[in-house]
Amino acid sequence: MKAVQISHYGGPEVLKIQETPIGQPKKGQALIRIKAAGVNFIDIYQRRGTYPVKLPYIPGLEASGIVEAIGDGVTNVKPKDFVAYVHEPGSYAEFSLVEAKHLISLPPQFSFEQGAAFPLQGMTAHYLLHEFRKVKPADIVLIHAAAGGMGLLLTQWAKHLGATVIGTVSTEEKAETAHRAGADHLIIYTKQDFAEEVNKITKGHGADLIIDGVGKTTFPGNMQAAALRGNIVIFGAASGVADPISPNELMKKSLTLSGGTLFNYLLNTQELMYRAQAVMDGIESGWLKLHINKTFPLEKAKEAHQQLEDRNTTGKVLLLP
Image 1 (cartoon, rainbow, N blue to C red):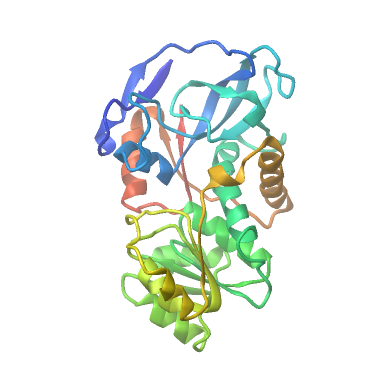
Image 2 (tube, rainbow, N blue to C red):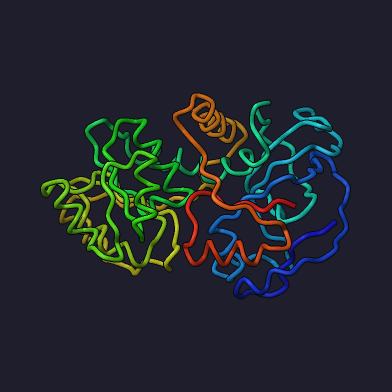
């Protein structure tokens, strides 16, 4: 099969197409013929070596496809089933072996592109908006990178919960994209100080919940933009790791600072299926819409990474083997 392999850490140029063996499913595994694979910032962190993985490896943690074969003991799926999955390595390939218990059965009306676009970002949006603060209709939620794949899902979900959403974006075009997703106020952080703007918009109240996947460039402003007894949640580092602060700084506004990663909110099959079903229900109900921005063939994985890394995308980026 064709697969993208990484033999050393570095820039997008380290993504190389190779011919590799397909393999056969062992006990508890399923062999998936991949139809679409999600491209995510965690793939970039792993490629750079920020989140080290054993070399060489096939990147990608999210995909949809068709069950080709199953190993002994697998009862939840069968060959020809349409499935999706997340947090199983090796999705930048034509086939992948995954633990069958992690497979999510796709509704018949879902395309493979939808199946690859919802698991990681959709379930991340779910835990970010349900685990740290119970969002109420009166709450003001600040979402950084509101026009990205994560930002658009977070914006729609926060609006569904009744919150007022303030989004930060880098361009007027991205502001329009986030506005169409439901954001009430947009701040172009390349031209405006977002903390000052948040306080103007909220008449000094600040944001009750701040969701930040950017990190280094946004975190200092978060401390200024947060409301009294507000919650700040860090779940990524697109601009680099945030600089440290003294825990006593949180006392000034009685803030709660949390860190999250999806791995820790999918600790068992029941939790995985609960979150996946919540996302699929939102999509099927129509209030949660996936924004698939760009698709690339497997051979163009380098270009997909470069565009995501340069923040030249809105919505989800997919590879189509």
